[in-house]
Amino acid sequence: MSKIGNSPIKVPKGVEVKVHSGEVRIKGPKGELTLQVPMGIIITPDGEKVGVGVKEKGSVNGATHGLYRALVNNMILGTSSGFEKTLQLVGVGFRAAMKGKQLELQLGFSHPVLLDVPAGLQVKIDQSTMITISGMDKQLVGQFAAIVRQVRPPEPYKGKGVRYVNEYVRKKAGKAAKGK
Image (cartoon, rainbow, N blue to C red; front, side, top):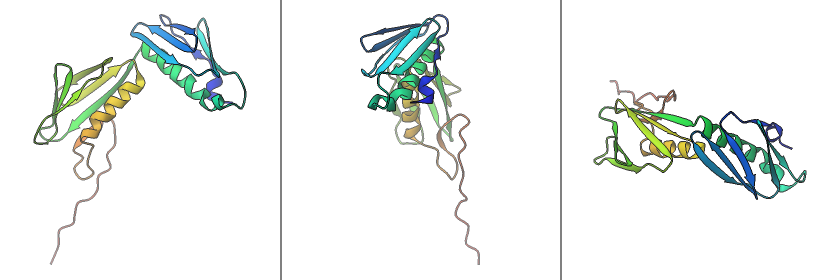
């Protein structure tokens, strides 16, 4: 049995949890999310708390017990307060801008990089070097932030590239000059 899976989830005010035929619907101030749950996982909403259980101990579903508890918890947090990732562009001439529904990145390549912003996400740009990605789906926010970072990850010599705010980039010493 999962220790994480057994702990109940607190439901904040304004969030509504409904379970119907293997589908969990969570509706809150930010929007609505749904999740398909396998047959062996039991989700029981009880007023201010939600419990996640398993039909049979030792079954295959026992391995995913904690996973589904975490997914439901993230859905509750997302619909009530949302999630946010902030990226920073480090480098001379590196900048970002929004063009309609696309994020335009100029990262030292010969061309600008255009990325389509997925539905359900908001992208805000501060000072043309700070990108804030927010939304109610934690997986979608993290995945899009990883895609943006992957365009130009920070390099170890000068630290230039796209990095998360407060990410530490370990720098390497450069090549030593030859002496006589």
